[in-house]
Amino acid sequence: MERFEVAVVGGGQAGLAVSHELTGAGVEHVVLERGKVGETWRRRWDTFCLVTPNWTVQLPGGHYDGDDPDGYLPRDEVVAFLERYATGFGAPVREGVDIAGIEPDADGGFTLRTSDGELRANSVVLATGAYQRQHRPGAKTLPPDLLQIDIDGYRHPGALPAGRVLVVGSGQSGCQIAEELREAGREVVLACGRAPWASRSLGGRDIVWWAAETGFLDQPGTALAGPAARLAANVQATDMGAATTSTTARSRRWASRLPGASSARPVTG
Ligand SMILES: Cc1cc2nc3c(=O)[nH]c(=O)nc-3n(C[C@H](O)[C@H](O)[C@H](O)COP(=O)(O)OP(=O)(O)OC[C@H]3O[C@@H](n4cnc5c(N)ncnc54)[C@H](O)[C@@H]3O)c2cc1C
Image (cartoon, rainbow, N blue to C red):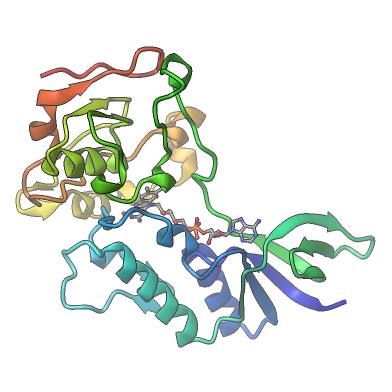
């Protein structure tokens, strides 16, 4: 059975960054990815773009070096960036390897059960990401014959059946998709949750610049008001259409609240 010093599970930005550091330290390892490098980003909808400016793309040994630091990379360019990053330092990635289970060994190491057989490692780094489980507040209140999809199932407006669309969730993705549907001529209802909304830019600077500059992004978890703060949504400031005007202003006309989603906050215009 193959044995590695370290097995990294997940070939997203975290797994690749760990691999970069292990490579630099000369530690033998393997990165196991069930899809392809950057798989999470590949699954996003067609017009997806980052909501964080390109200058925030700062992996160890791999900063954004394009000519649009204040822009927002589209999906395929995010994937291409991660692919270049991985090949740039020869990350030992094995794609298409799904980890089904990890058992501790008597010698202090681990056995990993993979779709490609078993392997052993002295240490395991789990870099499998977040946002993998769907959450459908209020879904039981909707008619069963209504098409209901999660964000992974959305591609573009033309792929949805004709008619009005209810978008549940007023964070970055919900607003971005609601805006796209609206611009495609759909009647859209946006069910709002607790995600705070802010202008894309203040004083000519992107809101993320302010978050970085004021030290907000450097706060450790221990500085949070309580455990629940870890679950707070990011500030919504996507606004694909116009980088200086908040989506908030334009969407208030059609914002609403999904009955049954008890945690939702009504927002009306
Ligand atoms: C809709 C959406 C929009 C976002 N937009 C932004 C943005 O604009 N800017 C930003 O900075 N962040 C954004 N994020 C957050 C960003 O996607 C995550 O912070 C980032 O992907 C985390 O990187 P990661 O490497 O930890 O996890 P991931 O990128 O999720 O990588 C985890 C990897 O592990 C693999 N994996 C999982 N389980 C297994 C297994 N059992 N076996 C093998 N492999 C496995 C997955 O296939 C995946 O490739 C967004 C998130 C979502 C959901």
